[in-house]
Image (cartoon, rainbow, N blue to C red; front, side):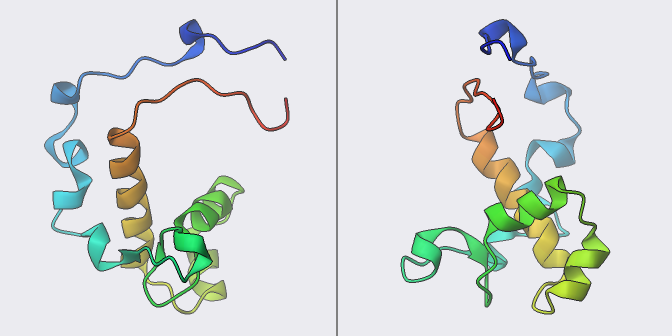
Length: 109
């Protein structure tokens, strides 16, 4: 695999061209991620987790990336709710929206 270059990074559309709801998912009336996501240095080394569980945001996103469905997650992790799963995505969207992204290679490279 060849090294990643800046020309490989997809260009984002300006925020003004996105639907209003997509511009700030945290203000969506459906979910407020701070109501569902917490970070405590005593739980998983401070990684953000779904409140009341030890399920890290990173872990849940990884399961979705591996092909798990919302239904499978809800059936296998009884502490989760559909709202908590939406909060996981709202949290990730806000964190990524505040970061400067740099190209990285795949772990398999």
